[in-house]
Length: 199
Length: 193
Image (cartoon, rainbow over all chains, first blue to last red):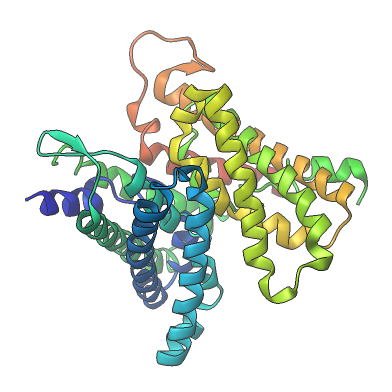
């Protein structure tokens, strides 16, 4: 039951883009085409889940026992940078076309605040489910990370669909490009507000 | 570019939000009120100036292959410093801004300036660049905060001018996107003239 609550809350209620404002730069950058949006969400999902598990373990067994919690920011970002490098090398080998399509945004996953944001959230924030607030354990953290990145993918793919339509419609000159995209996301976020209170 | 130009370019010509479109996450997340926007802008400026200075000093000796990780570690060091300072002297501000203080590490403005400016210019110019872009970011965040606070809670910097509630949606997530979108339209319109 608690896993179900974590999943619903991470995907819909506290959607990472539309409610938590994390990972907006790549969200705006690659969402103009449906295919790149799908690829990017896959890469981000992989990196977020892996990075969260690794940083969770490092925090629990290395930083906390030695009283080094203040090093969280530096340690986490280094782990994430190394992981992204690895994903890049693997992807280059397995799927060159996807690697081409993601272009500059792949190395930029390092500076995608969604990754560091989720890693820091799971080790610092208390989650409320089943009436009591508690810290997540490893399995819950992994599920939370995966669900969050699914929410990221959902928002990105929905938005890419809207944006492909937008590119064909006529908008006033000053609204062209990003401004109308932001207003569209605003309306999407309003729709997602409807989920609040479910969990 | 003149010294004066370095400091003022952040307002219009290279405005980090409206022209460069960088650092959107804190821009959207922390501008629920004018004061929050101002505080977030100042926190980012602190890291931006210090990291620009240090990176312009070490750039000549950092091997090209590892320059990004090195820059990120420099930035992360200053962010950690900022976290400790804020926890010690302004704990309630640290509490409000929450997650977005450690996330300055991955703010594309900071790494972007390191890569595009500080690594190629002198220490003095890099410091001024940090001040300029930082000021531009702070002013923009404050403006967005003011608009959202007026619409959302009917107050400016905590001073209420209406009784009753504002339009709650503007303090919540949708308002952030809408206000930023419409301010961008306004900026485009005014900049074109």
